[in-house]
Length: 519
Image (cartoon, rainbow, N blue to C red; front, side):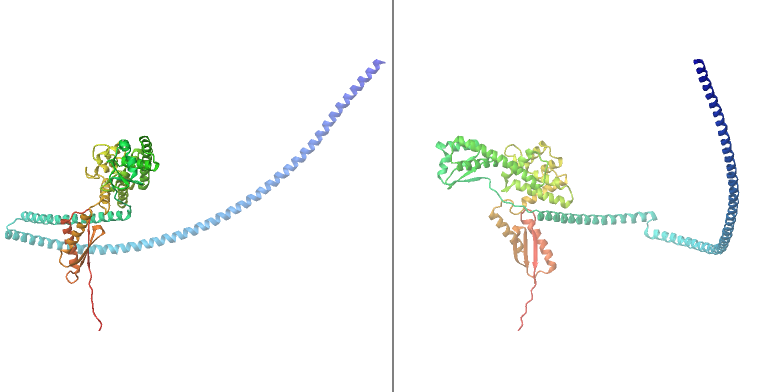
């Protein structure tokens, strides 16, 4: 039973396998037939497409050949046309060249005829030149016989005479140009200086060299003197000044060769008077306060001077020396104000000349720096100023300007010359330095008297502090031409007989008046 079941199963499996194989084979055959049918259809379609493409290509080929033939025909036509035009142009050019050749032939013939005529004229001219040379030689021989000079001797004589004449003429011309150059230079210098002076407006006041301290009452003199003079001795010892306490009411005088010491002493006394307690210890305290105050004032004054002058880069010690010049006077003129004025004028002159303005102002400001220390050390203020400038690393041009501003050495730079001129202008300005009133009046009277001595002068007026003399002349005795001579003569006489700083302008005035009366 089991065996028969197993056999049945095996038979069933074998049958299934056989059926599967048969099915697979049948399916493969079917697919092959379908594929062959599809391939046959594709070949037919491909052949059709190829035939259509060949047919289309043949048509395109024919069209292209036709278009190419038409284009070739068109190009050939255009080329033939262009060739015909070029042939015509070449023909025209050939015709023109033939005409030019004919014209040139005619001109050549004409030139040949002219050349023949010219050659004949040249031959005639050469013959005439030979004749002239012959006449010239005969004339030279005749001149040599008459003058007794050979040709070379006469030539040397003429050259020598001409050289002497030219030398004299050259000397006259040189002298004329030198004088003109001097006049122009002097005129230009006066214009520059006058312009600089006009542009500089600085305040000036003469200052005394002693300080006077006002007292509230005469009793204060006794308190300042102190018991057995101890207060005044302490004051003089600490401050280094001399106190002059005399019969002058309500005032004492502070005297010292050092203006800074004098200022410290003045402030000390004023503080003591305001405080009311006057004894040696208090004097020392007030002296220290006053000294510090003056030192601060000196520093501030120096800094303000630098700002006013427009100068920077100065060593702090130089700034202090500048501040000290506030308390220094020279012939009654404050040295700091004078230095600032010299700086302004030097800068203005430099700007007129087109040179370094800052350098000129710096040198002008520092030119009298030695006066801040000439009471403390031996030597002139020029030498001390040069030493200070070298010590604090000022430039060579500034040092040279300080050294040369009084002519101790020759000025070798334009800056030194400008500082010299500015220093002279500041010192010579009317009112800058004190002058005895009587001497001043006498000088003005003498100035007017010099002008009055000339014939034809009606009245004279000395104005502008003696810087100008105005002369009114009689119109019936002095004409317009004579006015020029009179002005020159008066100026020469003033130069000979008067000593004066700067220059004096001579101004001649002539006025003509006519009168009549209606009756």
